[in-house]
Length: 175
Image (cartoon, rainbow, N blue to C red; front, side):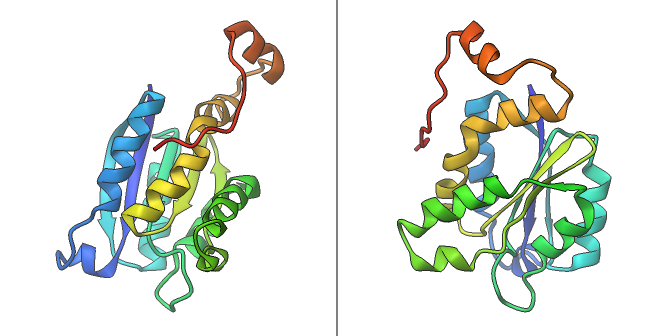
């Protein structure tokens, strides 16, 4: 079971002025990969608070999914805080999400989302809207267990592991 933390970044959400719909969407979707949410918080778009929370969660969970704060407005600081926390960036994750998003809207190219690793924790920034969360997470969801396994130190060879398990690796979008 993959232990997951969900962190919703929203000034209005943190004040109780907007109901968080993206966090519950993430929680529903990750059940498909045998994952469980063990931490869920809503914070305002404050870089220092976000960074502090990310650091406190690292090595307590295998996966941190953030939602919100990935755009261009001055208050969108999630990627900035994440970059200060991670030690190794994984650009392919966010490239895949943006690529898929561009098939729906040209605004996908404006995402500043970041994905990376600190210690044994994978951190991924996702957009703030439930529809965009679903679209973006569906692109990467099936790769997350393998990524986490490798981050945790697995020495299994990827191709041999897939063959031994009788699985074929394919891109599959989860709806």
